[in-house]
Length: 189
Image (cartoon, rainbow, N blue to C red; front, side, top):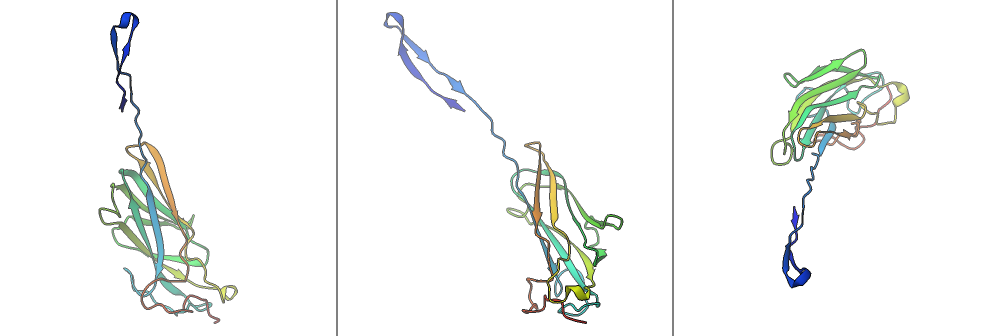
């Protein structure tokens, strides 16, 4: 709100009080954020298989999603990704709201409302699922993606707008204790 006051001399030098006012409203949309990471040595699942991954030998990984929300409650929050053909969905964390549709190869996490401040002034929301990666000989020497790009979306309850963000697809290159250089590159059979 802006109010400006002044006194002007009118006709006949009679003072006239002038007070124009202007008002405008600004609504800021919340900023959602998502981090996706792959784990093998830690996380909510016991993983198995060769490390580094080996062609034609399955290795399991935990995929962990972390969702954050800045300033307004976000309704109908959801995260989704599509699994590559060389990855198999194994299981979701119990009670997490994570589901898998085999027909579309889509993993979805229904978050419902994501409260303001989640991941900033309150704990972030996390959910995880386990996948099995069975590399082919054509992937030897590479660090393949374990999921597609993950996206989070919802509706900002205050601003009444759609909000979304993406997270880079996790690969066999892990950032966790127990991981050593070279353990991310697919080895020959």
